[in-house]
Amino acid sequence: MPMRSNALTPGVDIASESSEDRAEEETVVKGAPFQVISIRKDFNMTRVKMFATAVVLLMTLFALPVAHALPSGEVDNTYYDADLNIVGEKDILCDGTHYTWGITDATAFRSTMSSSCDSGFGTTGCYQWDVNGYTQVPLSHCGLF
Image (cartoon, rainbow, N blue to C red; front, top):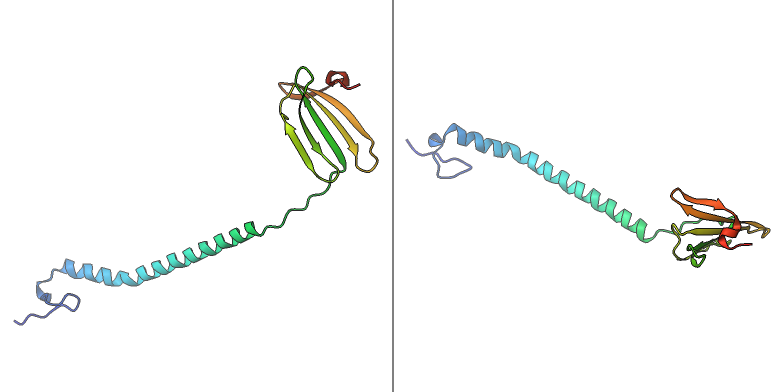
């Protein structure tokens, strides 16, 4: 009997191939279109991710400054140690400028002076630090008046 060769593997006699070999070849051949579709889906997802990343990058690079409303009043917080030495200051000015220097957290005392940007009239307060935060105390504790 003449040897018939297999189209996928020339020189192999079809009669000598087992049914498992043919089933495996058919699975590979049948699975090929699904592998191509899977690769296309992966490629499209990669393109979508790259586009989203580019959009976020451009938005970050060309972000415009955010407009903020100007404060209605000026606030000057001065921070003191236990001996009433000034150890820090935090100001918010009428033009929106923020100014901070020194230690501004959990100091022994804090005095707050606030005034209206329109009239200039304002208030003064003195606060002492305890475990719950700052508590208002008489102005003399901060060396004021």
